[in-house]
Length: 165
Image 1 (spheres, rainbow, N blue to C red):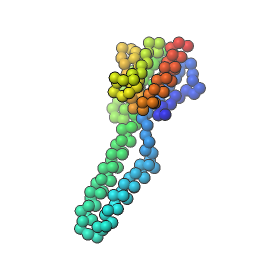
Image 2 (tube, rainbow, N blue to C red):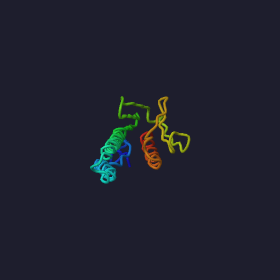
Image 3 (cartoon, rainbow, N blue to C red):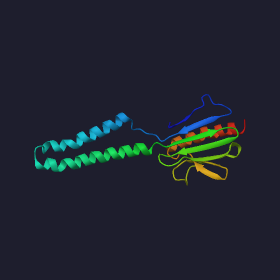
Image 4 (tube, rainbow, N blue to C red):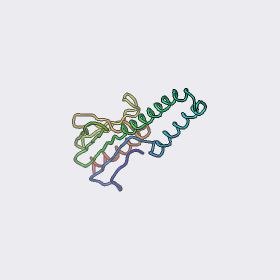
C-alpha cells in the first residue's frame, strides 16, 4: 500500500501516517521501456537503411522516443506528492507537500475531528475527508478506491483511540 504508519507498534499518544502516490515504474522499468520503444520503432528503418527515406524517417522516430522519455519523466516528477498526517490526543495535523509550490497544512483538535468516507459525490469514489477547525480537507485522493476504503478503516480506529484514550 502506498501509505505507512511510522509508529509500530501503535503508540497511544502519537501516530504518524505517510501517504504517497503509487509508482509502478521503477528506474529499471523506465530504462527498459525507453530502450524497447527505441528498438521496436527502429525496426522499420532497417528496411530503408542506406536510402534517402531512412534520413527522412529517422528524425520522427527519434522525436517519438524523446517525447516518450519526456512524458515518463514528467509523470515521475508529478508523482512525488507526499501527505503526512500526525495524530496526538490534542491535535491532528495534515501536511500536503505537492511537487511544485509550498506545502499546505491543516490542523484541528483531535477530539473534534470527523473522518468521512464519501462512496459517491466526490471527485473520486470512496473519497476520504477530515473535517475540523472549520475546514474539510481531502486525504489520499491519489490512492486507489480499495486503498482509500482500507485507509478509512485504519484511520477511524486510530482517531477514535487518540480522541478517547
